[in-house]
Image 1 (cartoon, rainbow, N blue to C red):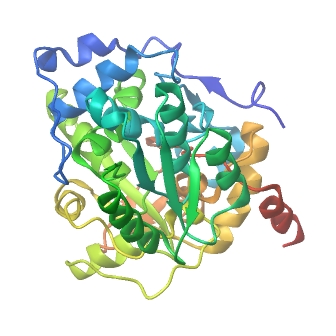
Image 2: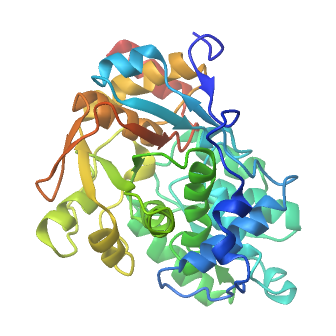
Amino acid sequence: MGTTNQVHCLADTKRSVSPNKLLNALQDTQPSTDRSLAPPTIYDIWQAYTHISAERELFSSHTKLIKGSPLLHKLSNGVEIFLALENKQPTHSFKIRGVFAELMALPPETLNKGVFTASSGNHGTAVAYLAKKLGIPCEVVVPTAVSDIKASMIEAHGGIIIRHGLTYDDAYRHAKQLAKERHSTFIDVSSRLAVAGQGTLALDILTQAPDVDAILLPVGGGALLAGVAIAAKEFAKIRQREILVIGAEPDGAACCYESLKAGKLVTLDCCETIADGLRVQTPDAHLFPILQNQVDEIVKVPEKSIRWGMGLLAGICDSLLEGAAVLGPMALLSGKGVLKGARGKEIDLRGKKVVTPLTGGNVDPSTMETLIVD
């Protein structure tokens, strides 16, 4: 089933507002070049947004929102669902936002030495894609179980793959060590500037849907959720209205859920989920306070719902979607519009406008075949 008869573009509605009108309080801010592991400010996010908007040749600077099908509305018990199509970026993932923000802060002499990164796939693809555009070397450390399509996309963009460890956490530690030994720059998915870049997704959403009630998105280590929360909560203040920010995790890899519930960082013994991009054992420590203070709730989504959602959303959107991408819609469907999370809150979103990003579309055909078998 295609999108023509089932979805409607939100960007063309009269309720959208210009970015400059919405963000005029921030227009005189100065760009940050701080690559430290510290949470970004709304000023960092705004600067990343202006830089991204100016580079239309590199990627889709403004993500289109579409209204979900009547089937999603029915199955969610009346939630007004809108989908943000981040899977339509050139690397088929939102990760390009953060990578761009970080690379643009590096001086040419640093870039020319090449870059290292760690990734479960999508972040590494974004680094390789932009490194190729800039003409610089790129090496990506991935877990040994990285999906074939994600590995091939990294290599297609000129990235050199190094396989190490069973989880993203293993690959991350190894990549940082290699970068140090080889005097190269490590592109961290959760640095200040990278998180600011991820937060620009919230500005794309809010300029098109300023009356949104909630933003519901997948969470692994916490970078995307933290960046979106910082931006959304700031603009909720500016517009003097409430905007809920909610994370969704697979129940087989729920490190942020368990940490929020415990009130401290929790490391999982293992991660078992089809959503390979969310196989993270421990939340990013420097971002955890953001999750505690600015995220309204984090919910778990059953593995069965994720697998069903990959097929369901692929039909609705006429596009392949990876497991992580369907966490938001499936949280709404599995809860029938009412979410119960780590804090014990019950959030009733029936009749509310909820935007949830489809964060990636890099999925192996073999994985989709298992959904049919199941």
